[in-house]
Length: 190
Image (cartoon, rainbow, N blue to C red; front, side):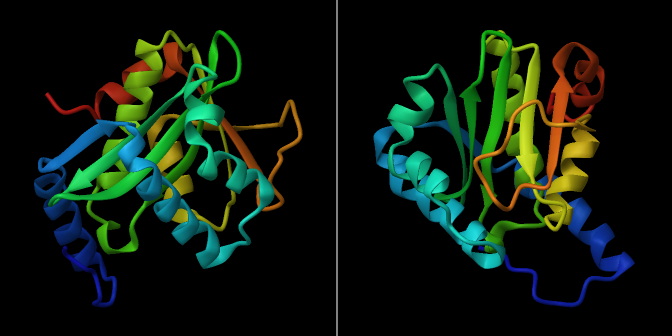
């Protein structure tokens, strides 16, 4: 799997951006099956423990994804690249019109290849297909690449309408799918 171990420069970012388009053509987006439970947990534990503390609310979802996400009317998507699951995210049903984008993770070895953007776009497309009119998310501003991606996809910062179960959360965002459809359509592959 490609790694990015050289210093980041403007020239390198341009090369990475061109390569990302090539790499994401070889990414398959998969819907959750029980055999992916370990991958879903591994990817999320990896990013959470890198900068934060794994919390009880994390383990509730990661140890019981079928019960916590799927049985409530949500979906879990995974990104496969070169035969390995390198990305994951969940869509949790909050109400009839709203899904929460949660547990978005890309393996460090696959970061910078556009896989997160491809996975997020697939999640938004899935949310539309599930009849959602709004996608909500919680994050941390220290995750600068993720926050940039969310803004690029059309999310906007909002004041929370409920407390977060996570200590690390310091930003709440939403995307109204009717408004965001034009912006995200530009990112979709033909």
